[in-house]
Image (tube, rainbow, N blue to C red; front, top):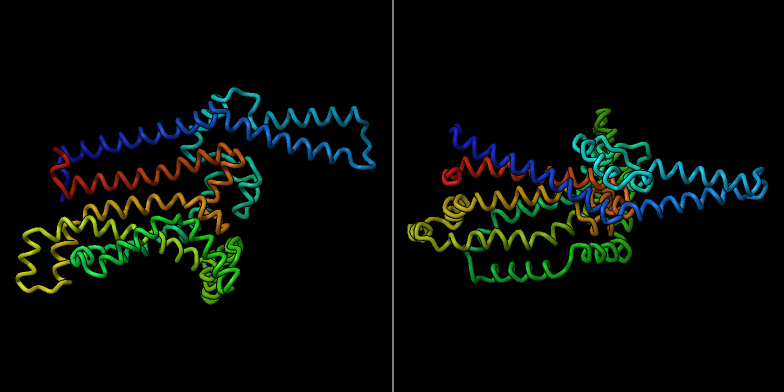
Length: 370
C-alpha cells in the first residue's frame, strides 16, 4: 500500500533518530577507549614487548654495534613505535580522528594478532577484515538462528494452542535448562565430548579458514565438483558449532513464540474457529500465526541482526575465526581502529534492521503514525 505524507514523516523521523543513535554510540566508544586510558595501557605494553624483542635481537653474539649504539637504536625504535601507534598525541585526537574514517571503514588493522586470527597479514583494512570474518559468523551463528526460527515460528503457536500438554511442559523445561547454561559452556562440553572423547568432530576449528577459502576459489573458478568436495570439509568443521548454537538458543525462541501466542489462543475468534470443527493446523495457521506475525517478525529480524556480531566467548571456545573472535582479539590487542569498525558495523546492521521494522510497523499498523 502507498505511504501517505504523515507515514513518510514518521519514517523519516525514526531514520534520523537511529542515525543520531549510531553517532552517539561511536562517540561513546571512542571516549571510553581514550579517556579511560584503555588503549594507552595496551599500546604501551605492546611497544614495551616490541622494544624488548628488538633489543634482544641487537644484543645477539656477534653484533657489530657497541652498547651505546644499541641503546641509541633502541631509543629511536621506541620513538618510531610511539609515533606509529599515535601515543605522541592526546587521546582525544588519537581516537576522535578515527570516527570519520570509521564511517567509510577506511581504517587499518594495527596489530598482527588481529590479522592473524583471520588467516591474513598486514597491511589490512578493517573493512576487509570484517568482510572476511562476517561470512564465517553467518555460517555458524546466523545460520543457527535461522534454523531456530524455522523450527520455533510454526511450532511455538502450536505449543501455546496445546497449553498444559506434555509437549508444552517439555518445551518449558527445555527452555529453562538451556537458559541456565551459557552457550560457551555447552560449546566446551561439545568440544570435549565429540572432539576429544568420541573423535567424531574436530577438536580445533581454525582449519575452517583454509576450507572456506578453497570453497570460495572453487566457486569463483566454476569448479562445481571441487566445490562440493570442499563443502564436505566445511560441513565437517561447522556442523557441531551450528548444532550447539541451535540447541542453546532454540529453547528461548520456542518459549518466546509460545508466550506471544498464548494471549491469542484464548480469544473468542479462536474459540469460535475451534467450535466450527476446523483442524488444529488451520486454526494455528489462519487464526494465530497471522495475528502474532508482527511481534514474531520483530523477534526474528532483531535476533538475526544481533547474531551478526557473533558470540565472543563461544567463538573463542571453538577457535572459530568469526566476528566474535575478532572482537576478542581486537580488544585484547588494543586495536582501536578495529574495535571502532566492529562496533560501527554491528550497530549499523542492528539499526538498519530496526529501521526496516519501523517501516513495517507504519505499513501494517496505521495507529503508529498517530
